[in-house]
Amino acid sequence: MTASSQAKTQIKSSPLAMAVLGILHLEPMHPYAIQRRIKEWGKDKVVNVGQRAQLYKTIARLQDAGLVAVRETGRDQQYPERTVYEITDTGRAACGTWLADMIAKPRNEFPEFPAALSFVMLLGPAGARVELERRAKSLRARLNEMDEDAAQARQLHLPRVVVLEDEYLRAITEAELRYVEGVVADLTAGTLTWSWESLAPHQDSPGQA
Image (cartoon, rainbow, N blue to C red; front, side):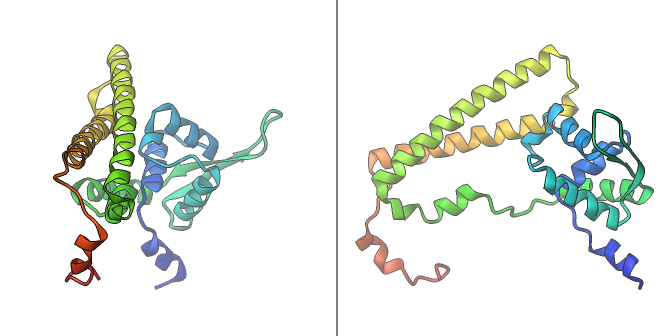
């Protein structure tokens, strides 16, 4: 196996890499235009495209793997030199494979909130209640923003398929709010409480190492 073919087998999917290939499916673009298109379409809510340097690194990885190629490099008086990239046939195939895999197979993505919940006992019942109430307030505000975005999408008569990720994020946020409010209610009622003395016997219990 050549070094080139080895590189092609080592490329891993990521939300940003998949988004780049998805954008280039439509037309060749330079990185700034790719970043702008992702933001214009509101995909930056599900794809981290805030750091241009990370975008350039991702495109370089895709190019090394043969999934994108340089279409042209040009410049004009208003902008510095810009390299325009296009998707390759290999990239189109990879994008389809990645999409199918990401949609079909749930993965443990290690988000921050569950990780913090696993150590919430360190805050004590009162401290946990305060912080969870703050989170619930933020979740309610986020839901209001999502509803405003959904109303705007309806006014623009956007096809449902282009806002499915918004539907998903709202469903997840709504479910999280219900959960957080339930835990707050239990903390308020005293049905969920703990102390260091009550936790001590479980310190070395199986599965807690």
